[in-house]
Amino acid sequence: MILEESQRPGRRGLSLALHLDMPLVIALVLLSALGLVILYSAAGEDMSMVTRQALRLVLSFIVLVAFAQIRPETLHRWTPHLYTLGLILLLAVLALGVIGKGAQRWLDLGILRFQPSEVMKVAVPMMVAWYLAETPLPPHFRRILVGIALFAVPALLIAKQPDLGTALLIISAGSFVLLFAGLPWRYLIVAFILAIPTAVLLWKFGMHGYQRQRVLTFINPESDPLGAGYHIIQSTIAIGSGGIYGKGWLNGTQSHLDFLPERHTDFIFAVFGEEFGLFGALLMLALYLFVILRCLYITSRAQDTFTRLLSGGLTITFLVYVFVNIGMVSGLLPVVGVPLPLISYGGSSMVTLMASFGMLMSIHTHRKLLKM
Image (cartoon, rainbow, N blue to C red):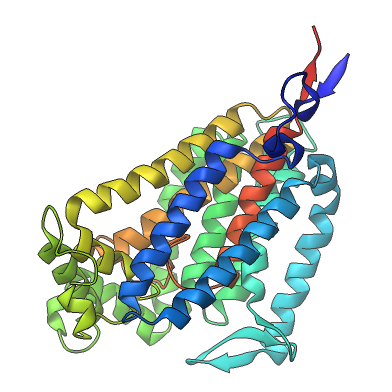
């Protein structure tokens, strides 16, 4: 007899009734609480900003619970429709989008203003997993090409907004699903070889001037310390000045004396590093590591190709978000405008992130079990 996970005798707790994975939920709550604590300092002790972020977190956790109730079969059935809707919205942005800070990335519906590119952060790995799950793995060459097209098209539309950082994240999300599908090594070697001329063409014809400047600044930030290199120089100073134990909560000088720009959004990790030091940073990384390992555990127990590819792709994509943000704030990567998950101030990215975790919990708690 086949039972669902939530129907196992003796396991009728609230978490299973709501299809939640409590270890993962607790880790997400701890990260979110840590984010509110450091946001209060980064925002100059502005409680209204913390309150708005807390409300966004409540909404995001509601989205997580809602997505956790959706059965994997339903996710599979909805995937092409969600992907198509995302493409339509991206085209609408290019035609009707609102311009802000030199970029055309938002749709304004009067009562709601949002970035359709956030929808594709979830829809792209879903669609690539849906397509590759239709035939035996590893995929053959033609299916690999179609899989690449499924994430290349939305990535190009997003890059035209321009939003190169999100476009690269979309590419990484689709690419990781391909890797989980068993992409042969020879294709990886070819891709690596082709990446060099592709990077040259992207540099000459596909990047805006400010994007090229970010790369040059990454190589040598001291070449323009008061201009393009200012962000990364002040960020690394803040992290380094925190030392082993940090200066203490609310005692960061780089942030409170306004030397550190974007301190409540993209560069919030620098505020955390200055105030809590190496020990604090290791604690945050430990929480992120637990989340990633728990998600990989869920991936290992997925029972069909679609859920295994989807959960694996979402997990590694989350890892990329964390790595890219901390890497750029620490001077290890160019600045690409990627927020730190669950910590940075913002709403739309948090909602899509929690939707991803909700799908992972659905995959884990809706598993079929044989009753002995």
